[in-house]
Length: 233
Length: 233
Image (cartoon, rainbow over all chains, first blue to last red; front, side, top):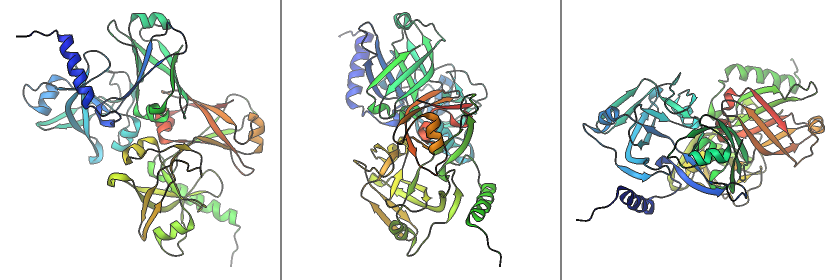
C-alpha cells in the first residue's frame, strides 16, 4: 500500500478541483484570483487580491441541523489560504418578508460561530440592514434562517458585510511595516480605478499575503480587468 | 381660468411626488441624495452625490413599440437636474439565456438613442459582459430585448455600465479649475472609505453640481451612511 503525505494529497485534490472549476462563477464563495507584483520593488511580496462572493460559515452543530447527524463538509475547491475550502454544501438563506438567496456556499472547515457574509447589494435584496464587521463580531447584526436538505438552522445574529481585510504572515508584515489590527490602503488600477482605504491587517504565522474584498467592491473597481494592485500605508 | 407658469407646475408636481416617494428604493432610477459642503471652504459649492440605480433611456420610437402608438412618458419623480425625471413607465430587460430583470425604470425625457445602464452585479446576473462607457457611446456593448405592455424593442447594442461622472455648471467648473471632459477624484468618508478616481466632468450651462455613481459603487462605499464627500483634482 502506498502512503501519501497529507500535503501531497491536498495538492493533488487542489489540482483536480482546479481543472473542474469554472473561474468567474459568483456562487463559489470566492472569485478570480489575480496576482501582481506591487510596484517595481523586487523585494515586494506577491500580492493576491480575491473577491469573496456571498458565503457562510457554520458550526458543526448547525451543519448537522442542515445536513444531518454526523455530517462532514466535503471540499469543493481549495482556497488560497492553506487548509480552507469552499465546500460542496450550499444552503438557502431566508431573510424577512419571505425573500431568500439560494445556493449560498459554506466555507470550511467548521467554526465556533455560524455567520453569513453578504455584499450590501444582496442584503438590500434580502431586506436586511447589515453592519460592516470583522469575522466573529456580530454586534447589532441581524439573523436569518438557513435551510439545508435535512433541516433548518436559526441564526439569532451573524449576517454581516465582512470588513475588507488583508491576510499576511510575519515577513509580509515586516515588509509593509505593520502589525495585526493596523490598516493599509489598496489602490486598484482599472477602467474604474480607486483606492479602498483602511483595510484591516490580519497577521497570522501561517497566512499568505492576500486581500479579501466583496463583490460590491470587486464590481465597483472592475476587479476582473484590473491591471495593477498596490498596498500602501 | 387660472394660468400657471411651467416652472410653478413643475415645482408643485415635484412637491407632490416627493411626499409619495419612499427614499432608498432601488428601482426608482436614482437613490438617496446626500448633500455636504466639500471641506470647510465657504466658497465651496454644495456637492450632491447620487446613486443611479439600473435604468434605461428610450427613443420616442422605442417607447411607442413598448407602450403603444403616441405614448408619452409620465413623470414619476423629478431628478436633481432640472427637466429630467424617473418615469412611471418600467420595462423588463431580457438578456441571453432567458435571464431577465423586471421593473427597470425609464428615465425621461426621450432621447435620440435607447440605452440600458446596469451595474456590473446586474450584468453578471443577466449574463452580459458590458463595457464602461459614457452615455451614448455604445462601442463594443451588447444589446438586449426590452419588453413593455404593448410590445418589444430590440436593442442591437447599448447595454453599458455608465461611467461615473460629475455634472456641473460654469461657476462650479471655475471653482474646481476644470473644463468639460476633465477628470476629478471623489473621496467618500464612511465605514468603507474610498477614493473613486477619475470621474468624468460633464459641463453644461444649466447643470447643477452632482456626482452620479452606480449601485456597485454606492454599495462599495456604504453611500447611505457616508459622512463626507469631497471632489478634488
